[in-house]
Image 1 (cartoon, rainbow, N blue to C red):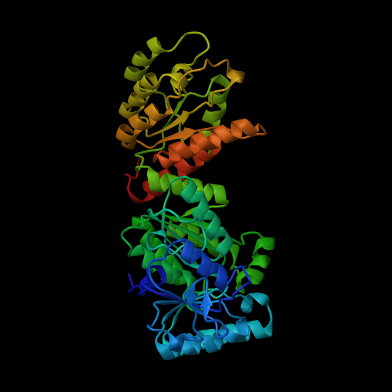
Image 2: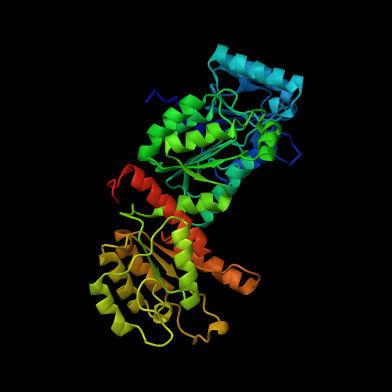
Length: 477
């Protein structure tokens, strides 16, 4: 693989200059970034740049970069678009090489002036050797460095790396992941990607040993051949979960006004997906579900799923759903069926796969026994457990919540085969939704993926199976 650029100062800066900090306009810009970096307790010095201020938020302000006591590792540019070129020239003079341009108003405007300004940015960067993130982007995010001026705050460090052309989508993903206990080690909101493109960040994150899974949202790319080559190499060791913006004709036409670049042809992107082997998703929920699976689960050895719980009708629907998603619902082994039949009442239950056994909802010891059968069965490669939310509709007696016991068992046994929970709380019942969200969060934050529907659980497991079947399983798996 080609040599990665040194982008460390974007994500682990020892000092930051924020150029263009207002004293009283709190909107997306210099003042909000300064405020949030203070609240995040960024450890290094912050240098607000404002020629008309002596102090902002209790911090000494400076008229320009030349008056700073040291050369900052990172400059965040928040001035008007027409002033950005002169700021970059000042950065070059004082030796600031890593620059995040928050400012919008360039090629994404579709105007001649905006395109000319962006071309000027690129020319200055080439001449001076500047590394520029943006323009028109939220920039770098790194909770371990307390660099959280946006996104989940204070955030959570973890195995996920994010590369995205959309600031809003990147911000939402960091919040979503953090709420479910999946930490983000580094995220890059790259906007128009005028100087540094997605491939530069991909190569950089490929070399970061703390990043195990990479989430990408792209609408366009400057060098498709380079992206294909890198993605194919990186994806073998670190799963890439890829959300492509601008697939539809309407979406593609919107891309130009978002980042100022063409979305590219649908056939070309489909070719990229197939040849690179990345896991393509199409919604934010599917993106997060696949990330959960890749970050928290071991590799499956096949596509056979054991469905535990669910009830009679649900068992039928769940089987159909899993098969429709590309999984299999195999019969249990003869030995397991012999062990199982005495445990399952003749009336009102189903012995086998799917397993309809009411006791698994209430008795953690029985559930553990059933899971052991799945872990020992050679035809079973993954397990989905239906976790019913206690409520009067099901004539459930009031009993202590057994979820903590189930979680403790799975922490020590669950990594033998991928095991996830279906916490079905969708619909219009607000109380059910609140209970379901709390239960799902508890599972996920304990390192056990839980999904709000069987469909989402099955699709996430298929992404996991398909990736490992391509790169780590025997051809006949």
